[in-house]
Length: 279
Image (cartoon, rainbow, N blue to C red; front, side, top):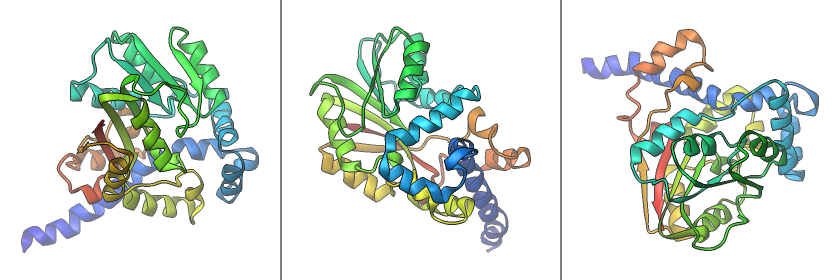
């Protein structure tokens, strides 16, 4: 009983604050992009997204790059996840879906990977990627219509992308199509239940639905991947705590976030789902 009381009094509040802090870090790019112009209030996001999603992300990247922002995602932690799986080999053909300005592709090339491609819906991001990493092929494309031949990729990687794609089934089906038999799809996306609560509090409403139209629960994620044809889907507990996230949350919360045993907590309370799906 004492342990239960201690859990309720200490761990639950600690966990809630930590989740809100991590979600704050994950959404910082949207808050920064909405700092000026017609994007300065969340009520403007939904019609803008519905009219032209690529234009929406072009705006985000244009503003971010103009302010000298070098990355919108946690490249180091994504790379750490890939390396921890021990699957990718230098000769593998790899497609980064939702590559942004190509930082993860660039990091992989630095580690000896030679056959890497990146696609993103934003032409602004792709233009920046081509300038930054001239030896890598980058193309503008929606996730549901990949400009890649069928059965041509050994691996697809896609981090912090699924939640932004309205046609989630088309996205997963296209990823399946381009993979070779036995190919692997590595992914990461926020937990629907955790993200919904934190985003609603932050936005003081439901404006977050504009940029996160396809949040997944553990069950829906597995179901949608199986429906796309993936025979084996494995969710992997991976810590969300990194230099990237810690630098984007209040300093006083950082020790609390570090105290959470992220790789031990139940799936329902995981802030993100990391995983691998095999064709």
